[in-house]
Length: 282
Ligand SMILES: [Zn+2]
Ligand SMILES: [Zn+2]
Figure (tube, rainbow, N blue to C red):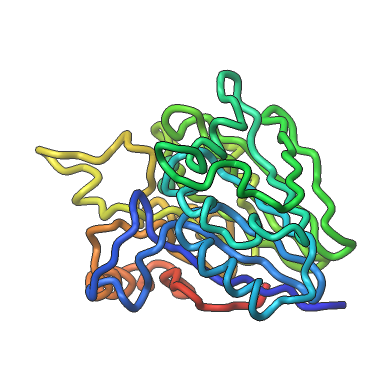
């Protein structure tokens, strides 16, 4: 049975940062690679997907088919797509899975950024064979990549204003939940908690310190993101083995994140900061 690995290519939330202070954990916006000997799955297409595309081009020359899963259409999760190398190479078949939301035209949502005036390329620059796959937000149909790699999804409507899809990557023995851009309305729903329950790896939105979330003058509550405290509580309640704190706040430096991690580990020992180009095994 081939092993399944995951590698963070973009860990930052909201917008990319190019600054010495974020050099260690990384300033690219969200993109996660899941790979086996024969399969490539990518979650989200933030600026991190650009380097990921270079990796596929240079180091995974065997790959012909790529499955991309989009959590939602906010720019930080999509802005790297037009620079993703495989789209411009006809040897690739690229399946893009996305939450089917009333009122969102998928072609505009994904591809307007390829067109003038945003870009000179135009959709004609896409040479790969693209297949768009709508995911029904009202029910979960398991997606089978291979016998040892399957994907469940769960739609949470709260992230403003069109909700967000959570994904669960499953091998025969293990599972990884990708839960970015989530915020409770009072409490997280039982449905969301049961989706996370028992995952081996939990990658959880942790954009805010409590002091910023509940700040008296400029609170960030309602922006659609979790606090570190929420991520810890979900990890404990779901009884996960390992927690990755993710969607780092663009104004939190590496040293600030490392200080926060020390506190987080007092409550949930097996916690880590998502870090660009860090590879782990599922
Ligand atoms: Zn985001
Ligand atoms: Zn978002």
